Amino acid sequence: MNTSSSSHCFTMWGLSYAIRPYPAPTLKTSVSMFTAPRSSSQLSVPQITHHYHLNHSPFVPEVIEAADSLYSEFRAVDDLVACNTSRVLKAFKNARVGSHHFAGCTGYGHDEAGGREALDQVFAEIVGAESAIVRSQFFSGTHAITCALFAILRPGDELLAVAGAPYDTLEEVIGKRDSHGMGSLKDFGVTYREVPLAEDGGLDWDKLSRALKPETKCALIQRSRGYSWRRSLSVSEIGRAIKIIKMQNPNCLVMVDNCYGEFVENIEPPYVGADLIAGSLIKNPGGTIAPCGGYVAGKEILVKAAASRLSAPGLGVDCGSTPGDIMRSFFQGLFLSPQMVGEAIKGTLLIAEVMASKGYKVEPLPRVTRHDTVQAVQLRSRERLLSFCEAVQRISPVGSFTRPVAGTTPGYASEVIFADGTFIDGSTSELSCDGPLREPYAVYCQTESQVYLNSPLQGGTHWTQWGLVLEETLLMTNVYPYHNRDLIMIDPHWYIGNTLSFFIAVCIILHGMLTVYSVKSSQQGSALLAARDRFVVLLRRRKLKLVK
Image 1 (cartoon, rainbow, N blue to C red):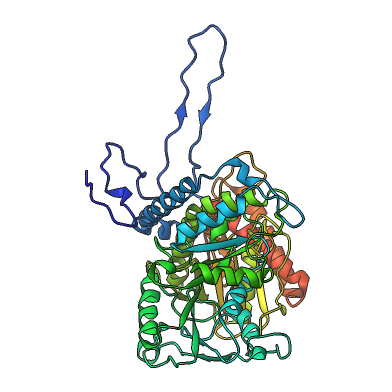
Image 2 (image 1 turned 135 degrees about the vertical axis):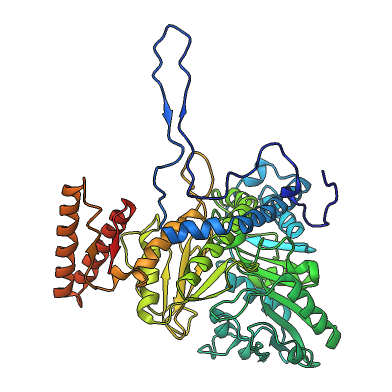
């Protein structure tokens, strides 16, 4: 056995076992039935037969082929999950987390049982920071980032965004758009510049090496892509950028928007010199369980300043109620985060593999190492973007009967459509997707799995939920020929021995198509078209062959 280890991780798959840790790498195989032995007693015990696998895969062939081809990548993700789980577990043990830390408090929060302090300690150790504040009173990642920026910047200072334009919701915080007189950074005399991205979508190292000025007080690095068609940044790239920034201006503080990046690698930005990071608990670090909240972590003096912006000078981190079961949700969600993020990464790999095989432009590319939990797909038209989001909503556990509609959303300049049949309102750490209705009409898929809080055993769904979603999205985005409202022919060899089913299928499909043709511009037509598509999928699973 190899006994060497890394400072941050270990290789689980390097261990040698007599039994394979994984089954054969294919979704096409099935496991034979297991029959329980008959009891030797005189009592009559019925024979129990367990069907461990269905005879037919629930996935369309494109998903099966993609999942089989990603076997090695999925194993590497499991290595990452094991590494990060070990890191989280160590932090929990060092903070001596106990059940008494789960107790809530009301009012001013002065009688809190130590849960806030323990949670802050755990989080700071996990991300490699001096200090952290993790609170339910942060109601979004934008709110946490705003508190951090206002903690750092003063009138006459300059904020420099080094990874192109920031996320849409920060534009009004900075004062770039529609926020005059509302207390933006610009209103308080803070100036702003940004360094455009390079042609390849990454940081422009040459421009960055000449970008800092004496008055530049804070450099903002956005780790994830946001709504920009660009690469997400690795922690290594962030570390390189920090060195370049500090060489030009050692007094410049580096703030990292860490949303969607937590636990995607085995280290976080404070390990490579970031002064502050901030993010949301209804994304990665909440593990799909946290019902609200956000965090700021980094240098202790800066974290205290951010806490004063959240509350008030003099109050800092030692106040604020946490009623009900929120603290337990925070601790449990944080512990489960590496597993949930692992499923998210597998989901991004699957989406990229399937959609790229159908000719769509994707970012990141298939099988490329991930640095966040977002997969972007260029759908190239407004109609496809709307259809994709409708398909995701239809396969969601909550609100599957609803239809997402594009509209204006606070903080966004363009119309945005969201598909989020989630247990936590707005939780992008659950399976969801969204996108602005503007060129290139890209959809941004956040691919973690849902945790069912009311089940007897806590746990999340699998990456396979995206496998089910992709079948619907391929239908809705005109990948399959029978979705183009063309005539459909059915392979005549199929109906031998299935005469009644064949007759019913023909009647329903033709009736649905004729009705759709007559009212295809109305809402009823859209509903009938969707019903027809779902029925065709059902027939497809029963090995009905459909061709143009």
